[in-house]
Image 1 (cartoon, rainbow, N blue to C red):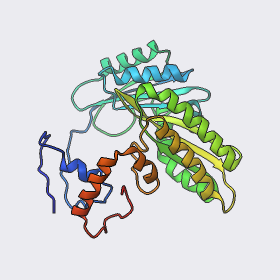
Image 2 (cartoon, rainbow, N blue to C red):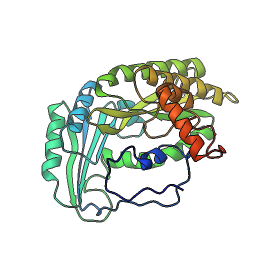
Image 3 (cartoon, helix red, strand yellow):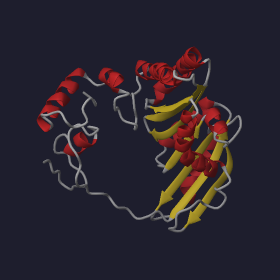
Length: 300
């Protein structure tokens, strides 16, 4: 049994919490956990903006991520992602939101909107402001891009299951990369996945959105959809997935940002993780799980 201490933070060596939490069930089973509890937000603010060009949208998102404004939500949808979810036609869509349990957000949201305009964005809805502890959308949000996207995001997993049951090859993959590497990565992913879909399926659709942003880079999230051939869907998917994963590693991105390694990403994780680290992880696994019964075949 390993029990870590309840601390707000610690610099006492490598964190046992992080080691176990990142092990994907290979080192043990969590039986108890402490949770951070924070007051529910009282103040909310948001706006939606459109862009004509991907390059300007990327510049705006990067500026927001490095501005110190710390939006609670900053999602960028490319024109294909926006169109397929009925958010907008022919435009890139940026959704920005703020939350606080302590203070009004008018100054923050207006500065964020100003920054977006400075980078060529057109604010088409908002800023919307709302005060109150109840859940829900700010006035005017329900019918704009943010509200439509929220509903599409919730429906997406169910729609994916329906498409798969109909023989459509559909999946998502996500990654993270530094700002200076995104352009080359994105071009390679779009090119290589389209080529793989053409080879395996005769064609297909690929879109991109940012699910998370950091001061040093974005976490792009891709969706591909292609016609399946009865009995060949898995082989078709493998061809597309391999092309996507190869492109990620070839351009310095991670094989996964938040979906985890699992069995699907293991071949690429073995190339991403330093060899010495893998050896240390294997030794840790032997100490924690000498019989090898915990999620075998994952990570190692």
